Amino acid sequence: MSANLEIKIRLDEFERILDLLKKSNARFSGILTQKDVYYNVEEFLLKLRIEDGKNYLIKYKRDESGKDRFSHYNILSLSGEKVDDYLSEIFNIEAVVEKKRTVFIIDNTRIHLDEVKNLGKFIELETVVTANYEDAKSEFETVMKILELDRKKQILNSYKNLISPDDFK
Image (cartoon, rainbow, N blue to C red; front, side, top):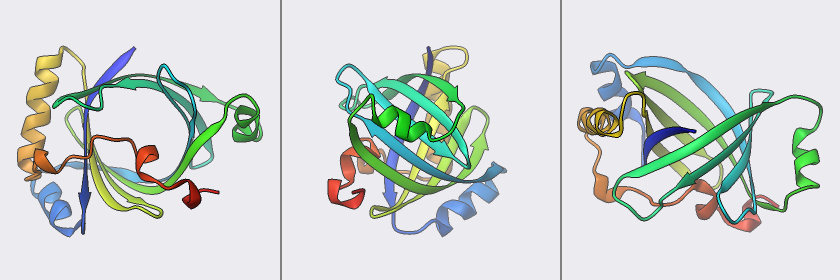
C-alpha cells in the first residue's frame, strides 16, 4: 500500500502561491478536470475518480485528527462504459465532488491548486513516502515553508465532508 503526507488549506486566491511556485522552480504538471464519487464504506474511504475520461477507484485510510495526516492508499485503474453507474449499483453514493485541479511538483510533493464546485479554492500538498516517513515529513515541511503555508489553517476533512448533499443531487 502506498502512503503520502497531506494537508488541505482554503485559499482566497492562487496568485501569491503561483508566484511562490514560480520562484521555487516547481514543475507544472498540468490542469485536470476531476469528478470524485465517494461511496459509503465504513472501514476506509472509497472513491471513484473520473479524470479526463479515465476512471480510478481509490481506497484509502487516513487519520483525520492527527497533526501529520498520513494517508495509505491503493489505486485501481478501471475501464469500460459507465463505470460510475456500475459502482453506484453496488455502493451507496455519499458525495460527489467536482473540481478543476492545477498540479505542480516539487521533488516527491504534488501541489494541487483546486477550484471545487460549490466550495471554493484550496491548496493541497501530497508528499509521497518513497524512502521513509521521516524523509517525507522533512520534504513536506520544506514545501510548506516555500509556499508560506500556515498549518493552523489546515482542514482536517476530505472534500466529501465539506460538501452539502444538496450540492450533488
